[in-house]
Length: 281
Length: 184
View 1 (cartoon, each protein chain N blue to C red):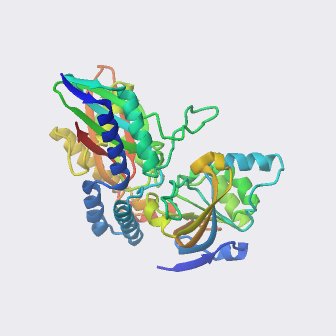
View 2 (cartoon, rainbow over the protein chains, first blue to last red):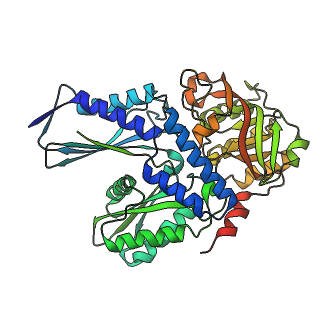
């Protein structure tokens, strides 16, 4: 067994949340620059320039690119030959989040209970942790601080197998159209198809960790991603919803085995501040 | 591109001059308020009690900023989604709010009340929080400090960039502009 101290996990989590909130991925930045050049709407062009300028300021000055510094979502692939020592794994993750949000002057946006008091936990914990045990002796950690302007525009639908590709397409386009300007376009559209209710949602979220210039490994799904992106950008919503040909930067689909009777689809929308960061211990 | 400079507070006459599509630079005072602060304000209005701020002629910005770093006037401060404030907006307009700054769609009821009371809905670019913060020169908390980021802040701003999305006649960029680029 390879021993890893809980404190090391804490340190990595902290560093990843700081990085994700300050520095936009080069995949997103490059895509924004490309799209800014191609955008036909003058307002859309101006909005994209503002977003690019914003992302440069955030990275240079180490301040949050968006005031909604998100719910802390953590994906962990834990090698089965790793033994975590000198501390509690879950607490290490929460402590990493706590320190990042405090020391990085990030906003604390979590309430401890959703319905009655909605009292802020004041340190942005607890994190949501998705844990997978995998072969090997490494720990792979991916974090995504998820903003709720776009999370609120996300949808789930249990389609019938007979609805097929066209049914899925219609549902995705309808979701993006209804969301309009609310999720801060240009957006990244994360799609989970298959599995069960929670599996579809999980893989939709996971798809948002993928670079916007990387397509699904399966050619059929890669083509579907490209077709959907083209259709979405024909909606005219545009940057900030003020009109234009840049409504989405990418459509990322993940799929999973599903039941003979089902076709679950989750559309998890992410704003242009599509923040994620990864590290391996 | 037409750029209009505005100084707050404003009169209804001045607000009625603004048209959808105008780019504006706002200077003066802007108050902040999100879901939790709006709920408390509207509870006070319903109980006919005094509000902690006189909103007559003022602008309200739907924002919950990040904490400011030492030496900075403000943390990142971009707009939040406005429709969450729709259920509270009509009473706020009756209290004299002349401008709302946010992002995203508004309800029909809100637009009707804007036309009636003479008010404008401005859009700031969602996710341009670090850039927008540059125009905020001083920040004070004026009410509900216990709400943290959701407290009512008074922002002193210089040339805060925004665009008139819905004017006081109900003209709405979200309805007119996307149509021009729609090809599906």
